[in-house]
Length: 212
Image 1 (cartoon, one colour):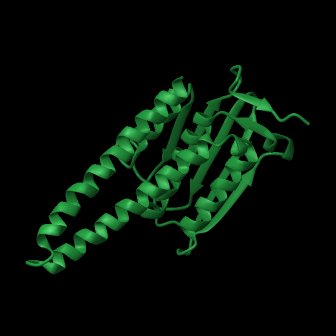
Image 2 (cartoon, one colour):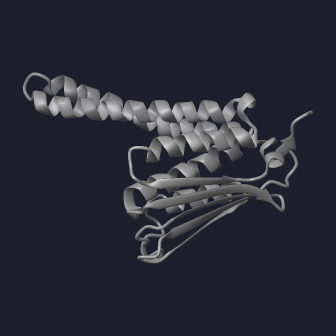
Image 3 (cartoon, helix red, strand yellow):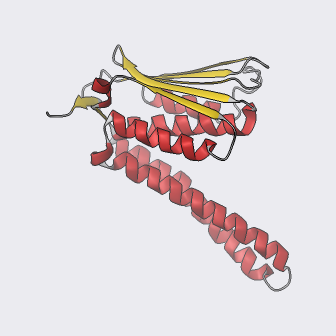
């Protein structure tokens, strides 16, 4: 019930807002196409970008809900594809370290998959936009009934006191706390940044093993 409610809220916020933007921009573009074709072209480009973002968001929700994709190894594969697609056009060297093979056979609840991915996505997107780094290292594993996700870069860093509410940090922390976990970010200007996500997985039904 909680998972359905959370995903329904995400759909309302993400899809509803984006579709409203597309509708609004489409109406403006229709009115501008003859009098101001250059402006109409820019609006259509923006509509295309919003549509692609929405399609990706819907694909992420479908993946999170797919019971055939709920093992830890599926989450890892999804992370790899996203990171490779994101960093491939850049010169950033990405390294991904994962837990043991026995951990990869574990199955995760849909909301754990989705929220963990959204934090991972936000962290990597911020790194690409703001860090000016050369290397990124991500690590994911399970230890002491806790899912650990660590992401670090060797970029310019930032003052966490000044940007605690910026770059989606507050939103990522809310995602973590909604599942009883935490997100810690350490950084100083010139020293790179390290983010550590911790999610408890000891509650019944949160994680289970594949039938062999």
